[in-house]
Image (cartoon, rainbow, N blue to C red):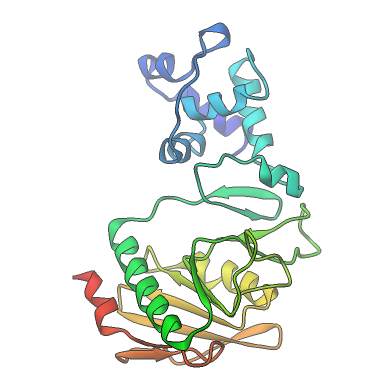
Length: 255
């Protein structure tokens, strides 16, 4: 969002609401901002959460300077920039800019929980491997990127080993799983496919709760080859030998 768009967003807010949201100078007070509030207000370019975040670095500044500062704070060029992002949210860094992920709805969370339990149970039987939820996965930075760090946060990952803190670029999990929140799933089927392939993740599942099927992508060289969508009652991983899931109890989370 450009500076002019931010100013327009402010201008079109009702006058009474503007007075409430845009406190200035010594009138600012510290607030506890939830990540949902942060996401809702910051990306609309008109909220107390955005101002409060900017205030940490630019106290007692004007509205325009505060909003410009907020935009600058979301630019992530280095690992240090990434470490300074707020702790109460999930962040992906793409092309030098931080993207705050929205909260998942109940349907999505129920499906993710069922998949986690099913995979964890199977790994316990196999006696190896880990399944992790919303963990940072480092992505090798493309040459055209404006930053030196890039990451994604898959809904689930399965790996032979557990990393220390997160999966660094060059040390990926064997399997990444994304659950669609919308039927179109544009990001999951475009940008994330490219990033996960560049990271060297050998297998990628896109779980489609709307059609009750799982799209399977297998790494072939430096890109993915899509397999026939899995519509059966079970699915087996090619990248993680022995991992076979019964999908019946997993799809039951959708009822």
